[in-house]
Each structure stands twice: as C-alpha cells, then as structure tokens.
Image (cartoon, rainbow, N blue to C red; front, side, top):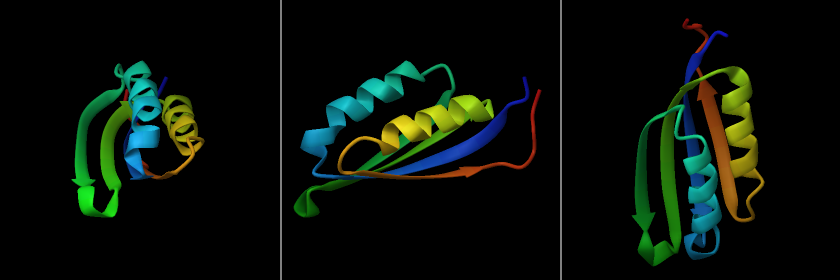
Length: 85
C-alpha cells in the first residue's frame, strides 16, 4: 500500500485530563510515528503536540480520528500529496 507523510497537530486543553488517553492512543500507532514534539503551556493549562508520521491514509486518518474524539483535544492534520512506496 502507498504511504504518505503527515503532520498531526494537537492542542490539549487541560492536559492532565486527556494526556493519559492521548499517550495510550499514540503508543498504539508507534509503528508509523517518526517524530513527536510537545510544548507545555503550564500557565495556560494547555499543551501543544505535533506528531510526524509515515503511514497509509487509513492509518493516518484512524490515528487522527481517535485523537480528535478525546474530550478537550483539538486535532488538525496535514497530509502530503506525494505517495511513497
């Protein structure tokens, strides 16, 4: 199957509530994750996380959908047009 590179950006409002579920879902997709960067905004009680992945559209969309279903988490994804073997 063809794969694509994508960047998933997530904003966690009140990360203490959502971080454990977020991390569990991300760990289930570790086979497609190439990099992850998290920036805590402690005074604002928020976190911003970007995840770079290489996977099929189904894998990328599945990960994005599961993360977006967590209460207090907003997710946006940018997917490359170029397909890789």
